[in-house]
Image (cartoon, rainbow, N blue to C red; front, side, top):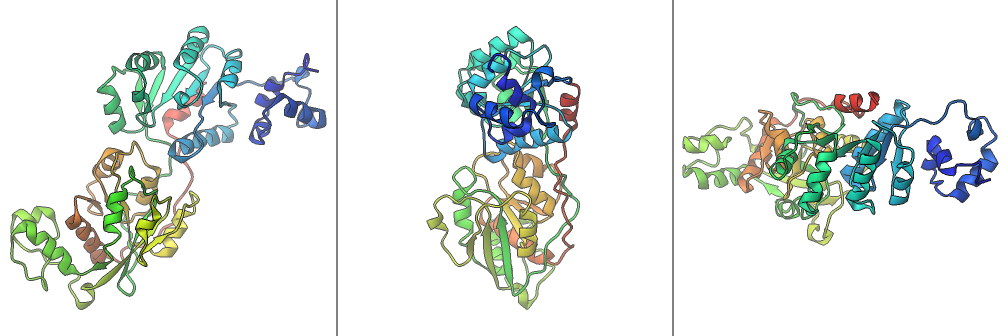
Amino acid sequence: MDNIFDWKYYLMKYKDLRDANINTVEMALYHWNKYGKGKRYGNIENDPEPFKCNIFIISPIKKGGSHKYIKDIMNYLDNMNINYISINNLEEFNYIKTILTDNDLLFAQYFTHMNITFNDIERCIKKTNVKLILPIHDLSYLNSKEDIIHNLFNLATYIIFPSNYIHKIYTNIYIINNYHIVPHNDINCVYNKLYIPKINKNIIKIGIITNVNIIKGFEFYKKLCYINKYNKDDFVNCVCRYSRTLINANAFITANPADLTKREPVYSKNLNSDAHNYTIHYYIYGYVNKKEEFKSKFIHLEGQYNENDIFDIIKNKNIHGLMYLNAHPEIYSYALTKGIAMRLPILYTNIGAIGERLGKYNDNRYHVYTGTESYYKFIQYIIDNNGTGGWEDIDTQIHINDFYVDLFNKN
């Protein structure tokens, strides 16, 4: 049977078998013997339409934004009926080397996390003239020897950076000419509309839709999430320390950092008796490191969420604003895209791709976190503008960037 049955070819031809984790010769033979004579799985030796594939994807990552990036690409290829093969280890890579032809695409994501080496990639490319595509997701290549990465980048047909931030880091170290700056495939955003639900019973609800750990801003969140009471006097007294202006806390607030140099108070839009005392609740949707440090009746650990469910969750919870307080830079951030699409006010640290993406919009709903005074300003903005706009349903369809459309369809 082995002489006439190419079990690897059988699995390559039928993606649903690979999706069902049929991945050994024994499993493939069992499936072929049981179903191979049917209409769906024909005699592959006499197949009138041989399996054709020009796209080979190396990606061992099974979680996080890097996994989503590849999953979105694979979903697009599936929807367009474009064949591809996913490579998960050196054995599979060694097999596909025997069927690669000129101008096939080798889409290599994180092969350094596998038992595939640079030398394996180099020998493959020089032998087959395959096109090497390198999507860059983090700084992991910087942990390898500089001359090896330099040679790898020279071999690549295209190097893809999702933001100017990560591009600048690499081009400060390497001379890279064959690059494209292409944002990740993602949902479309609406930047020009503000939405803040009405504040009920003087309770302000702040959402955090990302994991909370050292990289994502654990210390920032731990500090702010214990600020559970707000009085507009808090903001006034805070900014007065910087403006050195005596302001009547019952009548004025300073609304813009630029006004601090003028030493003039700026009237709030909502100065009334209800604007004095608020309770702040925090809703964290994601994994939280050291949960014991977030124990408070005002902090709600909601756990991780399904990707498209978060919109209904935020809507039904009547969240008034979001925080993205990374301590280390992001290179893109899918979670930020979701926040922008919700049209809520955002408090963020002005670093990496988050700062790059929000900073290019001259929109006062986006507040840079620089300390407690900037947080109070963010809260006051929510109070001043609560009840603005209405929730609009969000299209969760992934928009495929034209670069990827051209890349895969030309092949």
